[in-house]
Length: 110
Image 1 (cartoon, rainbow, N blue to C red):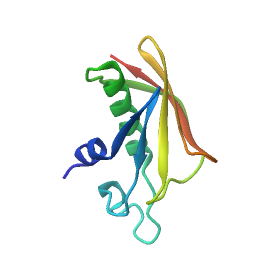
Image 2 (spheres, rainbow, N blue to C red):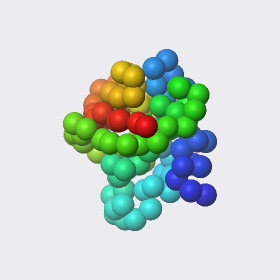
Image 3 (cartoon, helix red, strand yellow):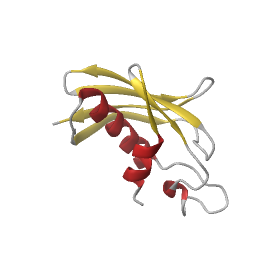
Image 4 (cartoon, one colour):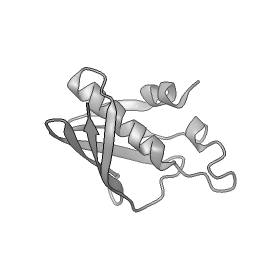
């Protein structure tokens, strides 16, 4: 199973975003890092693109990432919300839970 396929199964829509509950066996944790698995930044970006595509009802292609800040570690078992604020083809993204902002960035799509 690819990471994208796994993301699709974990995705739960929310108003202005989506929620993901990350199980210990989520493939993105494999090898990153073996003794203390964390969610790679690239997978956080993939999650955001998936939420954007679901929200607009069509696939979007990533063109550029701006203002990226990865402030806290996302671990297996975490429940995270990917919140999206659209501005035409630019989307402000905040990945958070109730107590922590894990990352924030802008995605520019085609």
